[in-house]
Length: 486
Ligand SMILES: Cc1ncc(COP(=O)(O)O)c(C=O)c1O
Image (cartoon, rainbow, N blue to C red):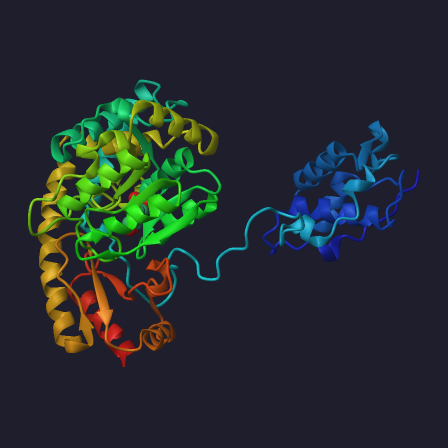
């Protein structure tokens, strides 16, 4: 019986690497077999002996041997031990490069488009981040959230509720969202009209999936929410930008676009236009719905931060007076917390079923525990109370943010006080390219002015969130921005 002794693996097994020891043994043995250092029929040391030589636990070697036997590299010869298999695995599985073994790079011809040069989301990392209108997560009482989760966990566990369930989402949350939309936003809906989604971003993508096919035209404003445009583009849509002003989308331009293209969808954020914050005027809302009827397109209404309106009663969503033509997308990210990833789509039941099918084949279903906890927070009135409380905090922050902008920038900047939402839209009378380059060099992380633009000649500006910053943070952020402006 031939025993090559000892196998020289020692220098290749290193406990400090982040690859498990048994995987390192497997990789080293495969490499030795492939290179002919271990020939078919060669007996390996016993697991006890190899473990001793390598200074590892015997179970680690047993695991590696078992795996190699299962893969066909080794075979068990009963009491005589373990040897290199007579018939090695198929040659197509051999001669693998390091990249194949370590997952360090893609070796297959994947079908994804190269990632954009500028990532869509503003990265997290060092430096000072200025967001585009996020809530202040510190204001949501952790204890309230914990209580809602605890109650939902007990209920779910007792009722065996944490099984695979309806892709449309937790029945309790669908009911709660439908009641909220009906009583507070005038949408004629029941739970059958609701699909819970992973944030409104997921809602936009799902809505687009049931609407848009490759080559279909989707109208967006020339300044808009880039991740939505990216979602339409990912589905092969032909993006048709139209202008906008302080009254919202240019309706004549939409009509013109409809005469020239077969428009499938129009994407708007009518409540607080992203990024400019303006509200779409009531007569334009009616005209847009009228165009939807005449030209047969759907409106994707992204009402991402509905709850935060400071100056007047918010206008009712388009979906409240043209429900058959609107896919209404909403979110709890701004009122509750972005990290919980709860959004929803409200649409006719057949559309909801089609969307739910997409959910089934992507993520299967939502997170029942989080959804049930959110339903509790809505049902108990806690979320509304929280909304009223933070609205006052944000209203004050908005005022002092505006005062600080005036103090620091004076005539250098032009803006309108946002009537709602959690951000300012600032137009600078300075070289914005230079300013943004300086901001980046200073470690300021904020959305690029180009991220909002769907055409090269759209008006340029920066969207600066104020709600997530306390007084000190707001002063620091604006001072840094002022420094970047030169
Ligand atoms: C206009 C707009 N739509 C959608 C979203 C997505 O938010 P979420 O997916 O967290 O609901 C955002 C996020 O800020 C947004 O600004």
